[in-house]
Image (cartoon, rainbow, N blue to C red; front, side):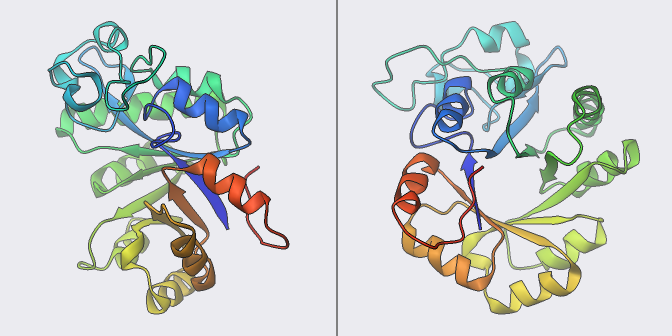
Length: 248
């Protein structure tokens, strides 16, 4: 089983910031998940919410702000007290901070069709330029995004983000040619895992923050767990013997 850092290390440093990814990376984490949105001027920005309100203490929609305006904001306001500035980053800045990562899930948040079209084009361009094939998976709960990524470059792996039991997240992932199902962990049971195995889908579960939950998912055969505490989980399992967990 693989441990994946959620938004870098969401509970250990300001989420979706360079410092969050860098600290987890320095601790030995090599698998990550992050959220990608589009700034007003068409740049790929790493942030989860549709607004800057929660993480920065300021106000405004991501879609209404240029990249320079967003990068000037401190996204560490949701983890007080944080001792250093943690700007909202460009996706390229995250990639530069963790050069030897093994895999990243780029989750594309829903938006207008026109903005999503631009985002998909920019994201595919970045993946091609940096030769990230085999080292990234574009995930989304928006099936149009998954289709568009495949239309632009069929070599890029995709994953469906399953948030509900119905309609079937497994069938939806298969229908749209995904290789991964990123699913809410409480929806996972032996029948779901058997269905995924038959369909050839890898399973990544979110968001899993306790050791007992992680061990239970491991027994079910889940491939990876996305956690807010990657460094703490890593430290715990490094102290255990003969457990098949992978971090690098």
